Image 1 (spheres, rainbow, N blue to C red):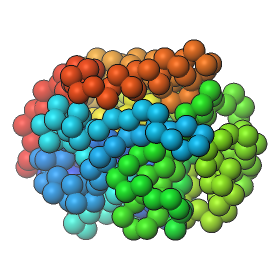
Image 2: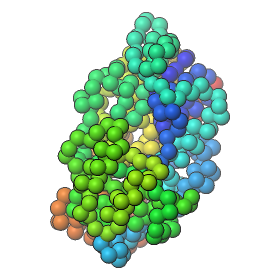
Image 3: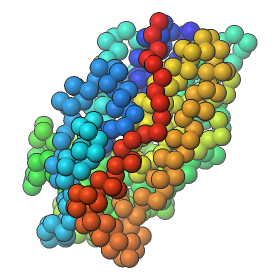
Length: 394
């Protein structure tokens, strides 16, 4: 089948890889003019790691990723008040199948695995989808028109495909009350190599991590009830200054350097909850279908699992896409809901609502420094309760 995949992030190229392997003809279209850069670091493990293994990606992910040796919570003066060795705890529980990697680096590694065999259209997106008895007619924002057997929306939290085929985003979005900003600065000092340094206060958290190219990645998470201006970086940065200018530690100095940021991303931490991920010849995958929010910590790995399962279902069902779409959601629905439900309770770990939540959070972080406690706490979350079917091949 000729299958249009909208979105060249993580889910889209993963799906394209497995569709190509099973004899389909995927086409990728991406609104951005090129693969996106920057973003935050993701912890990559579980069933998503197994999908990456089956794609032969793990050596590259290990090379591009980071083995963070310490997660360090500091006071306003920079003094360490709690810490955790993730290599000793998480890596041990995951039996080495774990890496921290920039989301953009993961996406690029997946895209490169296509080896130029998949048609990719940058700087465009879908503007209209019209289904007929035997195809889906697509009109692009550029004005071009094409026909496909299926259209798959892999275009993220603010999916254009979802809005066209299922309805407005507000019908499915569940905002978790936290806004996230991530950006990279060159030459920032101090540098604590392979240490994720965090400063958490009531209503916010700031994180910095030195990267090997000389830059530093920052991630701010903060409580925010107002609207976020879309596609307006200056207005978004103004919100950051207004909301966080009174924060302590290094935050004011970091904000002063925002105009020099190499990359910048800011969005609401939201979930997408839908009763169905398919409508006729259109289906959704990744954050477009069931975004767990970055608070879940496994959105990227989950997106790869969803793409793999969708490709496998299409392979098993032949051209019976209705059956394939049903099998795809039935296999993943319980796992996705569990991860979404777990993420809702994690907001207090990133942006405590009050001093009691802050005290409880710091106490838990301190206990996590005890290896046996940490292994018991994180061990179960490192194992996804899902069986991956054999790889789909032509």
